Image 1 (cartoon, rainbow, N blue to C red):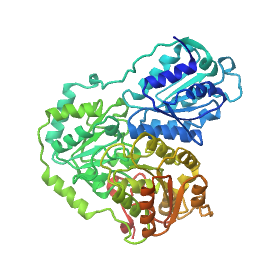
Image 2: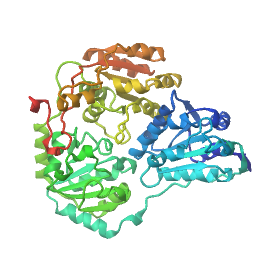
Image 3: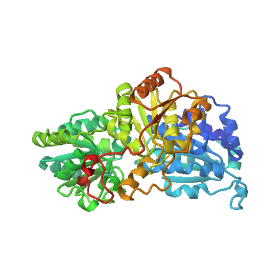
Image 4: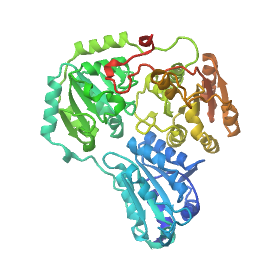
Length: 554
C-alpha cells in the first residue's frame, strides 16, 4: 500500500514495538507530529527542552532494556539532542534519534534552521543516516534499530528531509530483526585458555562492568562467581549486575572505590574483567595497575581489548554467552584463604561518614532503608559517588547514571524516561549545580503526572569541583560557589510539584516517607555542608592502592 513518509515512520516505530517517544516539535518535523497525533497507541512525552528528550530516551532504554526513541526538528532542535546522544554513546545505550531537516532542494544553502546533524553526530553515534529518498525510508529506520541493538549497543541518528515525510511510496510491514549473540568471535581454544588461567589462580578477583548488564548476564555471572569462589568489585556502570548485598562483594574500584577493592585488586594474581573498558577513573596510574596479576578480559567490543591496558588473554564476545560457555566447563574452585584475607580488609576499612548531621551518605542509606527496590537515577558529582557507594544495588538496571561522559543535567530527564518505562518508584538524586541545568523538566514530570522523587543534595557549591580545589588547588574556589539565594522549593511548587526543604536527619526522614506515600512528583531540597567530601579517593595519576580518606588526611 502507498503511504506518506510520515506514515511510514510511525508504522516502522510500531513494527519495532515502540510504545513511547520523547520529543519536541518544530516546522521541519510537523508532518511526523501530525501523523503521530493519529496514533494514541504511541505515547508522546513533550519535554521542556530537546536535551531532556534525549536523556529521557536514554533513561527509558537503561531501565527497560528496550531501544529509547527521541524526536526533534531541524537546526537547534537537532543540535539540542547532541549532549544526550553523546551520553548514550559513551555508556553504550541503544537510542534512536529521529530528526527532520529542511527539504532536499534547500540542503546546503544555509536555509532557515538547516544543520548537518548527521555530520555533527557521526563521532558520537554508531551510525548517522540522512534520508533524501522516501523509497529508502522504511529500510533505513529498520536498520537504525538493528544497529542500535547489535553487538555493543549505542545510539543511531536518522535525519529525514521534510519532503520525504510528505512524499508517498509503497510500504509493506515487516517483522523486526533482533540481533543474536555471535559465537564466531571466539573459539574453544579461547575458552580453554581462560579456564587454565582461572584454575591456576590462587588469588583471583572478578571485576564487573556495564557490559554484564547490557548482555543480561546476571544469572550466568552469579553462577560464575560461585564457581570461581572469588571476591567481586565493579565499575559505576556495573552496579547491580552482581548482587551488592553478597558477602564477597567489595564495592566499586578506582578513584572513589573502596579501600578493600583497590587494595585487593592490587594484590590479586588474576583479574577477570567482565564487560569493562578500563577507564582512567578505574586505572589510576595504568603502569602500576594490578601489577601482580594476569588479566583476563571478556568484552563484546574488540576495540576495548588492549586499548587502555595490556591484558594477558581476552575473549571477544557477548558476556552472557561467553560466561555460559565457561560455566559449562569450569569445575568448582576454592579460595577460602584469599576470601578471608579480603574479608579482613572489609572489616579494617569500612565505609564511614560522620554519625551526626544531615549528609549525602546518610540520605543514600535512608533511601535504601525505605525504598530498596527503587530505580535510582543520579546527576554527576559527589552525590553520584555517594549513591554508588552507599546504596546496595541487588539487580541490574536499577542505577541509571552518566558514567562515561559525566553529564550534569542528565538525571531528571533520565528519571522521566525511567518512570515512564517501568512500574517502580524512580528517585533522582541531584546536586544543586546539576539540578539548575535541566530543572525545567520538572514541568514535564508534573504534566505527565509522574510520581518520581527528586532529591537535591544542596551544598550551595559545585561539590566535586570544590573538593578538587580543596585538595589540589590550594582552596582557590574559582567559580564554584552557588550561594545566591535560589529557592528550589518555590521553583518546584511553581512547576507543579510538592516540595519540602530539610536541614536535619529527622526532617529528611519525614519528607522522604511523605514523598514515597503521596505518589506525586515530589522535590526534597536537602541542605548539607559545603565541605562534605567523597571518601575514599585516589589522586589523579596515582596508583589505586594509594587511596586515602579524611582520616589519612589528618
